[in-house]
Every structure is written in structure tokens, then in C-alpha cells.
Image 1: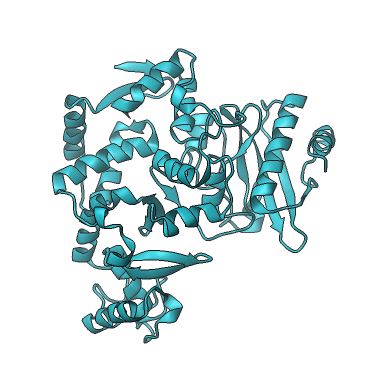
Image 2: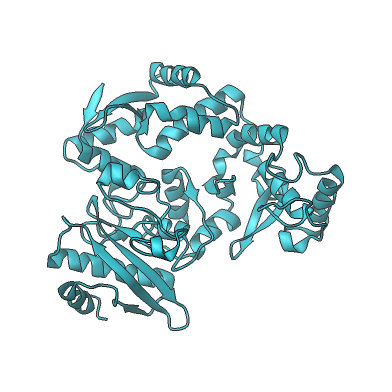
Amino acid sequence: MDSISKQTYRRFLLGSQGLWPGRRFSGLIGAESALKQMQALQLDPLVMVARSQDIAMHGRILDYKPDLLYRMAYEKRKAFDYGGWLMMYPMSEFPYWQLHMRRRAEKGMRWAAFTHPPKKVVKFVLDELREKGPLGNRDIEGDAVKAWSYRGRKETSVTLFYLWLTGEVMISNRRGFDRIYDLRERVLPKEFDYAAGVAETEGFFAKKHIAFHGIARENSLKTDLSYYIQRKVEAKEAKAQVERLIEAGNVSRVRVEGFGENFLVLKEDQAHLSALEAGKIPKAWKPRGVTTAEEVTFLAPLEIVSARGRAKKVFDFDYVWEVYKPAHQRRWGYYTLPILYGDDLVARLDPKLDRTTNTLHVLGFWLEDDAPKDATFADALASGLKRFADMIGAKKIDLGGVKHSKLRAHLKRAAAL
């Protein structure tokens, strides 16, 4: 079993997600490639400064603008969004998700006012879509649900959500963040409109779990696989799946410095690990522009490498997205983002966009105790701020939240503010 240093682990997690050593994607094709590299992109409606998914793609795509994701997914049909834990996936995966969707249909919606929608409501919704084309919740009339559901106030709205979960309809587009649904056959490219076999699907999702996490904890497979295939996977079965993948040469076990458990890595990523452990950067990761040592990257609040406690385990960086905390309980700020510099998380900022004046306000800025405070870092931060402001359409940057006077003065000069 190979062993790797914690630095290699950290760099691999960043690099396998397309965040390090710099942006390696560009344009519409780059957006599709970035999503495949990431495996999945979590979507969120909040737009304090930009939506989490746009911040995530901005950290990977050299010339990213917020319309690029929708164009790639809904105009070019290269991706689909799905699930109660709302994620966007490459369109080529749809055949594997059909098992998940079929089992969703068999189980129904246990948390709604009904297990399965009334047949007459299902028929009505499908007829409306068939006759009128893509529709949103607000476009279809319906009776109020008999019991509260956060999926909709009307039977037709909850039914649309049910039909989406079961794969009969797909999201055709969005108005802002509102879902616009249409029949599956009018959204899904024909080459992907089939169901993969059960065994093939289970193997696919086992490998996807590992790819999504970069290096996955061996004991974590049963939880994610249970979700992907919509049936409970016991520890014994998950272990057997791992052994089959290892015997087939698809997966290897890895030990990571500082961790007492085994990790799993895909065969195609082993060469990258070896290169990193030797102090080299994989050729496939060559950035198109500046590196993260030359320009900082602001990580999205739902970024897989840092969200849900991973920042603390991997980077010794205590990060909690405090958007749902009451103001008096926040340690930092409402929409605080981690700052990636080189291969480390060194600071955080709380940004807000004033759309009336097109001003990016830095409401708060906090450096880690061991963060660099030299001119090189200040230049990298200024460059990152300018790129971020350009992405969200801000014409000015207010640095009022940067309390370090020397750093603030340097940023004003470097960013010509």
C-alpha cells in the first residue's frame, strides 16, 4: 500500500477538482470539462455576491461569466441537475441515474402529503407540458396541498418535483433560479436515453464516489453508494465492492500522513499522486493562465475541498458557512469565502455586491495566523479581487473591511482602486 504526505494529499484534492495549480479550463467547452473534472457541482439559490456554483466555476474557468453554466447545461444539453441535495452532473451520466430514479418512483415521496401523486394530477401535469411546452411551477394551476410541503404549495408543484425525481421530466431551463420543466424526451439527448444495467450502475457509482472525493475514505463508500443506488448498502457489501474494484485493477488503497484509516484512489489518478509525491506537477494540470501562487482564488461556500468540515481536516482551516446562523452567532460573516493561495487556505473574506452602484464591498477580511503578509501575497490578493469583481460585473471595490492598514494601502495601489 502506497503512503503519501499530507501536502500531496492536499495538492491532489485541489488538483483533482481543477483548482490547482491554476485555472486550466476556458469557454463553453471548458465549462463542460470542468464539470466532468469535478464530477458534480452543488447548486444553491443564494446570490449575496454570486451564487455558490458560479464562484466554484469561476475558480476553475479562466474567462468565466455567470451565464456560461446555464448555456452549457441548458442550451448545449451537456449537463443536468438533479436530486434533493441539488447537484449538476455531466449529461453522459444520465443512463446510470435511471436506476436511482426508478427506485425513487417505487418508494414514492415519504415526506410529502402523499406517497405518490394522484394519477389524475400526474396526467394533468404531463398533458400540460405536452401541449404547452416547458413550464414552471407558477405556470400550472392546481389545488393547494393538504399538508405543508417545502417542495410546493400546490399539488401540481409537488407532482412536478416528483416527476423530476423519477426522471419523467427534466429541468429544461431556469428563470433566475426557478426551475422550468419539460418532458424527458424533449430535453435528454437520445444517445443517453437508456438505462444502464444494475451491476454496471453500482460499479459506476462506486468509482464516482471515489472520483468526487479525490481520495475517498474506504469506510465512506457505503453511505454514498446507498444514496446513488437508492437502497441500503451494508458495510460488508461495500467492502466486497471495494475488493472487486481492487482485484480488477480499478482502485488502489493509499495511506495518508496524519490519518489512521485507509483511503481509495482510482487507477487513472495514481500517476498524479506519484508525480506530486516526487515534487512535480502533473502535465495534465498545467494552468492556462496564472497560478494560485500568483493570484488567489476565492473558494465557493459549498466547495467539496473545504465544505462540511473538510477544510479543518485537510488545511487546518476552521471554516463554517455561516449564512444560516443568526447574526449574533456568526464568527466571521454572512457569506464568508475561504481564500486559496498556492496550495493552502490562508485567509477569508466576506463579500457583498451592491448592484445599484456596481460596487464589490469587502465587509470583512481575516488572515490566518501563519498567513503570508508580504507584497507578493498582497499582489496575488489584488489580482484575485480584480478578477472576481470582473466576473460579477462590479466596477468598484470597497476595501473597508480590510483592517490591516498596510495591506489595504497595497491593495488600493495594486488594484488601482
